[in-house]
Length: 329
Image 1 (cartoon, rainbow, N blue to C red):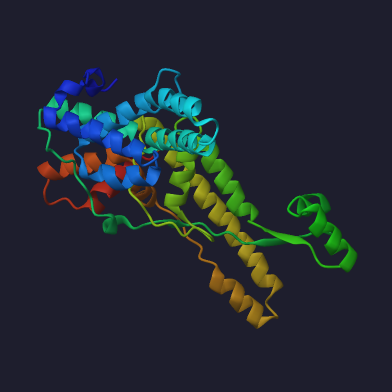
Image 2 (image 1 turned 90 degrees about the vertical axis):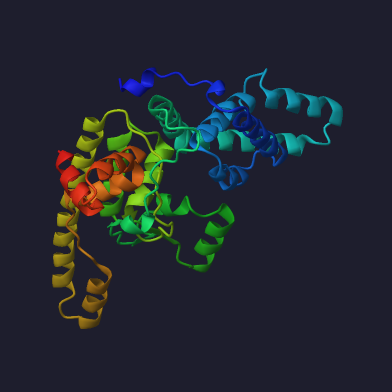
């Protein structure tokens, strides 16, 4: 157990002004229908400790317990509205669940750790943690997904599941082709392996965020972000990334063989061969590549670099991550 885990945080760790800011924010959050967008846009201007207690009390005030502030308020609305505000009640309930899930998945654990560290180091309420420039690591590993067209004739049960009964009847009566586009087995195999590898360390939504943030593939238009995912055991997480590193290069090797066979099959069709090769980027990953991914995903890695940099001012981020990549084993 890290030493900071033993530290207890209390609302009285904050100044009276900061305490008032916490509850004023919660009040405004409720008045804005517990919208996640309002939360994410507004919380950035608060200190780490204020953010932590905002999240801590949001989980209490807007939770599903019968005696929570939200449950009591919704019960009042229900009793006094004669059903006229049922849609408002449903919206608030939905937004509350969505907001608290977001807090648990992306905010709470990191803020809790940081708040405890601030108290341990007695750095003051105004202290801000290292904020790296994302431009330093706007990095993703390429993950090639060869789209495969599957027709109704090839797999009627699978393809028809994507069509309504009406559309299916029309297509069969007019001879219109029914088909779906599926990702390649290379992409799906790696994605399934990736999700399985992390299932004991992160929840499903967090693994999805990590996957999208780490790999470029068809349809992934999200920007690279600094995620706030947390791990409990660095040895375990480095070992998982070592397995992912090996699996990624294994898949890339299989893809290379696949492309070689495709080249042979299309060698007499120059245009088709040229089109095929222009789409494919075979990439062999290094441990440093996966260390870049870890830096983007985990604040513990970023803060570790920040602490190291203070004592070793000449060490670049590139050098630091290269050295740390040796832990991926």
